[in-house]
Length: 553
Image: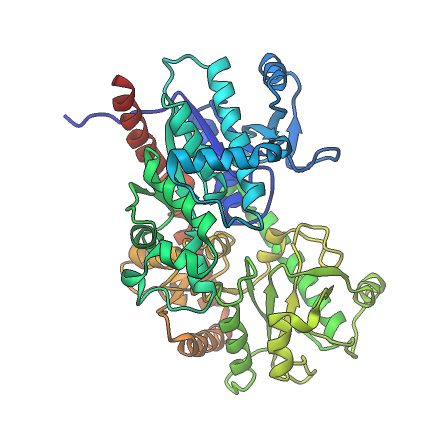
């Protein structure tokens, strides 16, 4: 008879992105929270940095009646927290911790990490200190809450996400060994750095020494703390088989469990609300495009978007732009194409001339100056997207069959131009493209298909590999996702295939496009958290069994 899995009585999770919307990890945690809350009602506590002191955080609802005696006792030890609910579906419990006081002890903490685990913080710079002080503070929250509020008989798990939480999970493994620890890397810091520095990652993965490369690329501190966390926790996890291979080679530690990233259906409107929001999104996108370029955009304009973190090569932004350039000379395009690059850059402000046109309304037949970008940038001369557009003469000429618009801001509903959150614009796209070189999972394509938007990704993304495996062959755009084979050297081939896919999709009639949209949504259904949460239960089981064995001694 198969032994049943051990389940936790209480779960702590920490991340820099708890109540702090930065990137993909926010989506992982916030969409999974409802499923966890249903399975462990108010027995899951997320821990994040208190970055909004003195001003209101729209993602956090403080509740001063929650655990008042613990909050007071923690404060007496110098641990200052605010408690409440994360303002997302499921409304999970949250602790936001002030990590600023621990900077005074930074050298002492780094010394202890070296003595206890060999973590080399000597060459730390940039965000390492800030992340590490938060990580330590989060660990103190776990320790304090466990000692004060929970019985030693309780089975408790602490899951820490990314290198930014590694110092703290090592602290817990040493000073609170009763707690089972899980460390999840969503991308190895050194793997991302190798790829981002233009080095071939995949063909030579077997030959790279992670520690040696960390020295070469000035990544010693981040790599060191991440590597030690991977080796010392009870359960080491990542988000895809693609990154699992990377962990085994660069961190010298195979993952215990792969935790693929899911999504939650309640983020997507249904029925009439879906159609209404899609129509509103398309109308707004085309209105902005007309006001900026002075060109006419008929209702059947094919809207193609890319988005995500501004990693020019890793996220395939370079390939997206190259595909757009090639599409300019594609005489087979059957309708106008509008391609949007939605990645946050160093924004100065929304363009006032564009704002004025949008406020006045109506349509325009003359372009604004520099009709390729919606916002003003600091050091625009040094921006990779603008440099590409300028060097290739892509100025959104009124007669061009393909227009490219750079949207260099966070789409949070307050960008000054679109004034709609990301999902409320995504729903209006016809096609999305993420030709990534380095993409451990790939939330952007999963989000796209969840909103019934067929997408293009690559075989180097965890999501792309999952899509192929789920469909049972190389997935095509008719299936809802086109997975383009990509390697270290074929970026130009990928751009050509993406350009061809845009042209092929532009030629789809309504029947074919609707079928692709339905297939996209069906594939997204298979990535709901109700299917993927079982992998987390596997991780809990592994961690709890190791902790149980350890605490017998």
